[in-house]
Figure 1 (cartoon, rainbow, N blue to C red):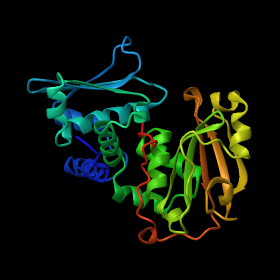
Figure 2: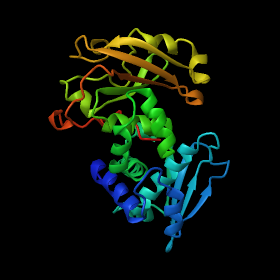
Figure 3: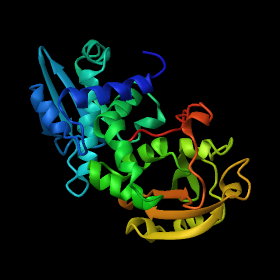
Length: 290
């Protein structure tokens, strides 16, 4: 396997959701696994650093996931990710050739393994299919509140909801995840790209001065998941952004040590995604949806 087939993998996830009758949110990956007679079990505590496992033994398939009782969305995404290894063409054979066991690890996006990228996009399509997602977004508010509502509606993690929201929204919005004073990754919506070519911040770029930088200067803000809102402009965050006014909503992501920033404005016009640049936002530094 060479370059990951991201769009194809997402479409396959949506197809599997429809195949099993899931046409509204939320989609239950545990139920889909049961329908395929896949045994799903929590990972042993000894498997530190492993977020999920797909195991093939003869004609039997097994999925193991990391239990996170306070974050059930992470459990569901992990199971959906491992289902990608079961359903996506080429994955079972590759894993069988490697001994029949494949481990997924938190932070594996830094290595950008194609098999992991495809499983993540499959999981996003499975848990948040385009049709019900767009129906939801049509009535959702703009910004962080929309992400929080999508997390609740789709029963996914806040990170999965944020990235999918940014990838699908027809209004101008961007999400940035940072640690300390450095950016980890960023996505901008089709609606934002439709307003003009904006070069978003890259992995390891320093945070610009403003609400997020000030928020991250106190680690307790992140640890207890505080939320603040400030004002910024596109030129502060993007090359070529100009003086477009933006809300800068900031949310600490708890024990991960990361911070989610949502840039948006209800005063900006909705863009036409068909007029936006077709460049792929998933650059080598981009995350999985875990």
